[in-house]
Length: 119
Image (tube, rainbow, N blue to C red; front, side, top):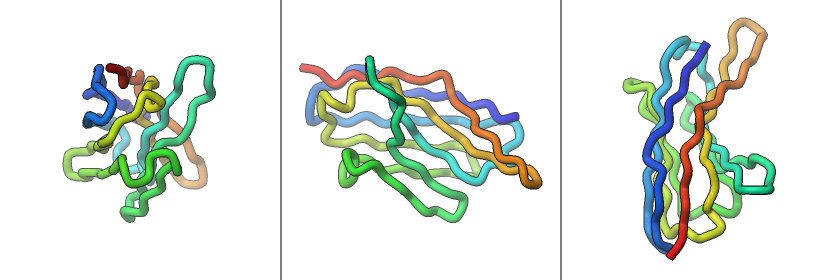
């Protein structure tokens, strides 16, 4: 089992920045990938960015060049630096962790943190 706790959401004006953090606890050694997803009202949850244990990063096209995902394995944390925010970035942002034990993979989610971009 892995527990994820997000922090750092809030209200920001267009063009502003926010930094989201996610702290992982529990079966940390089984994690092979962490990331961020988001869900806007009336829309499906979508990938924002992921990072593997090896440091490989993957970004949604809509956030490339604006968002940066990083991971501190020593602190069991993943962060999402969001710059040049747009109103369309408004959503609940969820931290995600994927684990593998033997041949069994599992997916864990945080409780979500609201990001609102508005003037």
